[in-house]
Image (cartoon, rainbow, N blue to C red; front, side):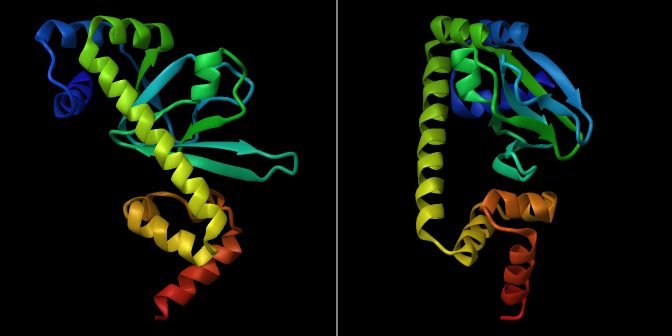
Length: 192
């Protein structure tokens, strides 16, 4: 599985063979079955995860038992609870597998070590974090100023493959609408 991650790295940065060997030496691979948790609410997130295979989601559950999906991650995407990871505090989120998955895990201390020893790796991590922050801000802004129909249309445009991989109730949760509202929107779109 490291070859999958190596290809990802080769597309992003240029480093020496010894650097790849160092990176591989700190990677842990975890296989998840569908519905298995990578992180449970209340646990401290100790690793950043890179999805080699499969599909995961990050979500919280409110006091009424309603799930709020905040992030999906499929192949070549990263997933963790950055706040819990950086502050060593209990997570407010669950991360579980929507499909069987293989996730490459790198601990916080090893990310810091790799960033110190491999400047190109540090630059890549910083770029990923910046893009993630930008995407999160744009998602919040768009959610506040758009209708449910507009949010779903944007989701279709931004993540066309996820529509067929994610259960409808999870897509609705991500969009901040009920499954019934999503069904109505999908029906309206298909009748156009």
